[in-house]
Length: 256
Image 1 (tube, one colour):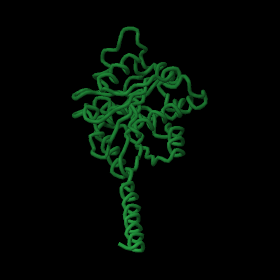
Image 2 (cartoon, rainbow, N blue to C red):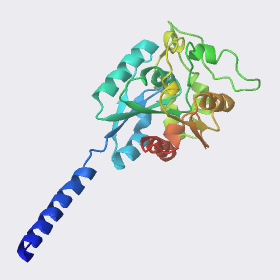
Image 3 (tube, rainbow, N blue to C red):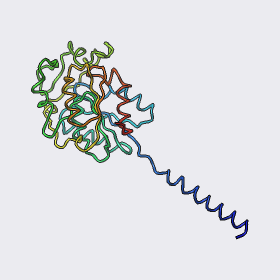
Image 4 (cartoon, rainbow, N blue to C red):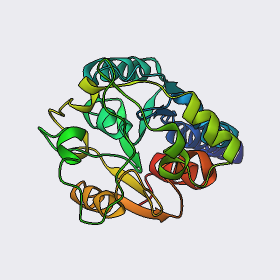
């Protein structure tokens, strides 16, 4: 073979290799979308700090504004948010939102669950069942008797119970802007908990006076969740948005 032909053959081989290498690395990386689900007594606006961190870090974020009238309604709203999200979804729930994501998280687009000081029920469990027998010495949330089928927290005790480490003015606003929480939602039972088939992460708020810390640890252990402790109140997602966002990003990256 002449030198010219050899050079041409070599160039052709290099061109083919160069073309093949990008192709091997051009597989699209699944888009990570985050869907944030709020709990009872509040709406999705409390996620703003977490939302800001996640958006800055390049994630697509959706906040499900659940009416908290019934578990089935809230699951339906959350599933619509999942369907509208781009690519793979990390589903995040705070407090009662943990019940919602446990039920809605079986959606095939959901690749991981993140519980933030949240309930993580098993099949047949509801919040009403989970709080029926609180541990001895546990703080009792200042939930007022039902009014027309809805629950509220005592405004005077809201900050101490729910948001002790939140700016006092913000905590006062949260107390005055409470969203009525339906008794029917409290009684909603999970059918097939998503944490049995999806990887999960759990942030334990170690200064929580709504869900006992030991109960949080037990639910996280039962779910096989990667668990982190964070000093914070039940509203840790408001007071410590960076820590909450970090755990969500760990979940998005599959970090255990």
